[in-house]
Image 1: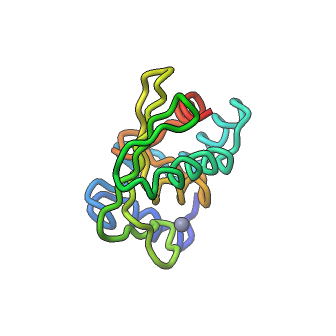
Image 2 (image 1 turned 135 degrees about the horizontal axis):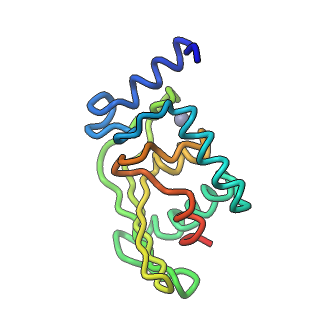
Length: 150
Ligand SMILES: [Zn+2]
């Protein structure tokens, strides 16, 4: 596949040490287009869209955002906490501005599974259908999200 200058720029911004220390691709050898396409396909098989996933994540982040770094209980089975730290993270897809460094930690107590996401994860899933590469510290597996969030 021939890459456009913008795609080359995005690929570069996803590398470790460019925007963030660990980057967005982990040890995944695939192009970001392939990562996105496969995750979209996985979600389609599960009957969900990236937008639905993002909407659900946003719901939990919003509810816990003003809890002043204390865990709250949501819908009986979820424990949720959002921590906001100073600074902003830029989007590797070259959106202007930055995303607050807020990290939401959610536990589904029925399953005993805890997942976490940043504001940038949420944005990238919603706007770019990007869940990050395999091995990236903030990679979110679409199957796991569907299982835990719904
Ligand atoms: Zn973006």
